[in-house]
Image (cartoon, rainbow, N blue to C red):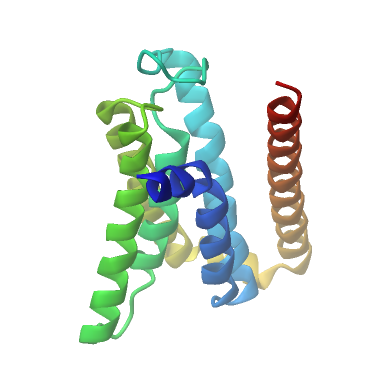
Length: 187
């Protein structure tokens, strides 16, 4: 039970590290295309939260709207994009991709288990993330990635945007974790 709580509390960091490893295995332009997709979906998810304004379950420590779950969106985007990159489907690759999606689904369900989201909020986030990953990957395969690879200025701009967005994500996360730690020490 304690292990599940630790995994839940650190899910965004675990998912981020797995995501960074995964995109490091792609070509640079493809990696940035993939990262741009998760950035776009993250903002879309936050926008939907403020339009839908569905509260989180009673007892949740967070007070912002919960529909859809941003954790589920990001985690399932990572797993969905990884699954969408499957080529030459050997039994090992099928098993690896299925395991990635299964682990991601389990990580998102921890949000329900620990009272941070309702089941419908997590399912909505998972559908947004997984569906968004498939659409984003298809758009890249249909030509967007080729355009990006063919234009040096556009590619460098995208790299800069991705680096800035991920740096911002980690700095905000660090500050939040530090503030929480200081509050625990003071209280």
